[in-house]
Image 1 (spheres, rainbow, N blue to C red):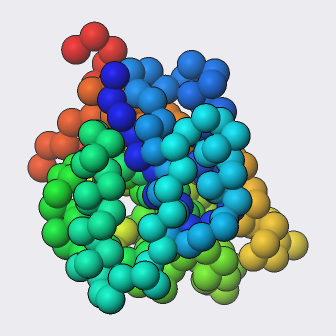
Image 2 (image 1 turned 90 degrees about the horizontal axis):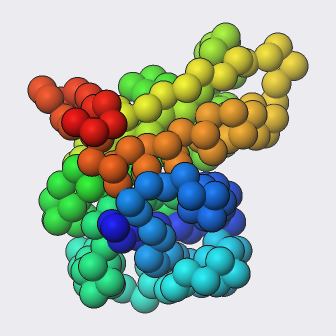
Length: 211
């Protein structure tokens, strides 16, 4: 049984999908061990507590720099023997040493079809604003491994979502979450915990069950 640590910064809607999946038995060979927030008082912490999951606040502003904060995160995760780190709306920058400490063991969900609309500055509503500004007909979400390139790690799962002519950034954001992010993230976490993800030449292969 693998221990999962979820890093959050806000309301925790993606965290809730993982909690719901765990309670439904859909995360095979994994359990949510701890939720760590970079901001105090966010609703994600309440979601974790309600589900009986340890909730920890490590406020970014309490540390002098990225390295010091990243080390505090590492220490907290290692103390709880976390095997997989999931970034679920985690808006705080971490150091390269943090990523290297969990090689191919950090997952992130991004609200676009990477490599489009990824990288520095593309987060939250900014992604959906950019999609609409380009007149895209299709968008979606991606779950990927995290490496030292922002949104540049190997892609695990993707799902397309229709862009409608009357969309505002907020309505598109909601549809992408409901139809793609909340579907893909529990799937990817379960696949990882089952040992069914293999990276070959920078490409993620999903192995059949039992292999």
